[in-house]
Length: 362
Image 1 (tube, rainbow, N blue to C red):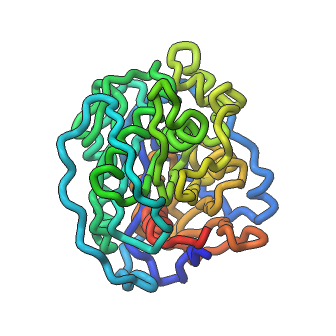
Image 2: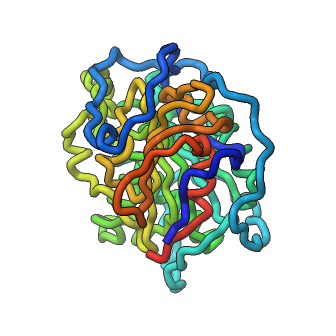
């Protein structure tokens, strides 16, 4: 089984990322929730329609000297460069390779998926700079690619001309074809790191292939090989703030609690090789409550951060950029019977790196 756990006190490895979202400035610091408190936390009240604001790091303590990655493995040669970004859906020839086995690895391609943006103009490079740096520092050598789904996006490795009215299921279909193209190029499964709505896009890609893949209409690829999905502040069960923008943005409508889209999704849809989910949340996320961000506590592995040992807190945007500090929170890994609390945890991007590296023998 995966041995992920909050790293002991001084073992902070530089890591943590979070996609587009608004930054909390509340000076109040929440106390570490008890296990029972975490399980019964209520969703936040409806917020005004969200808008994109510049990223900002929370106040964090000086970075500690990083220690070596736990149980590092011998790395394979890095992947070669991707060919130019595909501009349309093209079904590749059917391959005869067996589904890949799950394994501890730092050589798989990693796909980064941003979150909802009312202005539909995400800069993929700046959005994921912190996460990429953390993973490279931790020895990840696989190809990093950013997936964008707005026509106004910039510096994305893959982009199509979607809008905030492009339904999340359709964005997921585009992602499915892109992931399929990576498999046909490299014959390696991929990992995904997603912020906010990006986590729903990842689930939609797998769900769509499981339901419709290989159909006679050719709309979905026959298979996907996605090993790990890490979500940062994703409204897996919806979010109240989406109700405010739902009348004017279809993607917000999809993210409303109880929407038809969310009812269509399975809790943890598995790709054809098996997929493990790690959900990362914050008690101070002003857009997505921790119960929703952990998929109603049903993600394979989840952690919800309270505050750092120096009193720092994280809002929605900071979940995809925070990479230093020792943190308090509640967590549960799939081999645990119950959740636990700790104040010896690594920050979100460091937790993401551990989740991508380790495998369990699912």
